[in-house]
Image 1 (cartoon, rainbow, N blue to C red):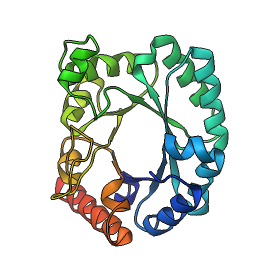
Image 2: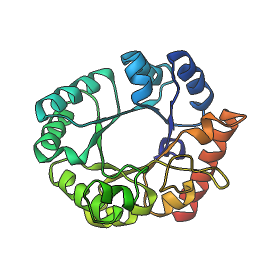
Image 3: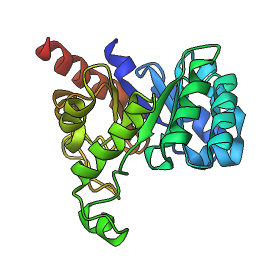
Image 4: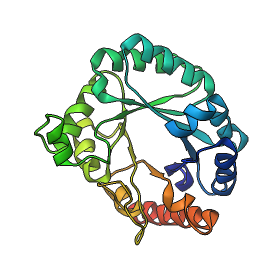
Length: 238
């Protein structure tokens, strides 16, 4: 993967016009544009078309979690839109994951499913309030093994669990890390964050970066700076 293909810019904007403008600034630097719930609910498939407009892969972050048949059909529709990556919740269970994996395998172009294990906004106290006494790392590994055994080989996980996840599911897994913050950037509402370099060192394949680019005084320069850091980290590791 080229360094830019390891960076996904989150188009966390309220409107298509703002997302298109943000994408135009960041796309020269990054290889992936992420469309999340806020934008997709308002704009629908038009939001996914931003990727094609800039010849960039689209990461459709919908975190699907429903009955197996519904999720299978949603995966099929996402593939038809041209999504390259698509998220779903590992906690949806084996049947849901298997039906989703089968739908992705039938996609006309490559579609990588990414199982969400534990949201980066949750910590151990949050899990306890949900009735889970395991640590975030233990819960991440348990859900990841379920998803992997069901045919889903991509995962979304914080940098703090990447190494454990890699050990649990092996070298073929594709690991995506959100909550990336360059040195000196605020954590916002994320509780388990990492710098680009540390996330890559822990084994991440793709980094999701939103506010540090979107809210920068010069988003394009911020995006190029992050990709430069990724390139340096990849080079030093090789």
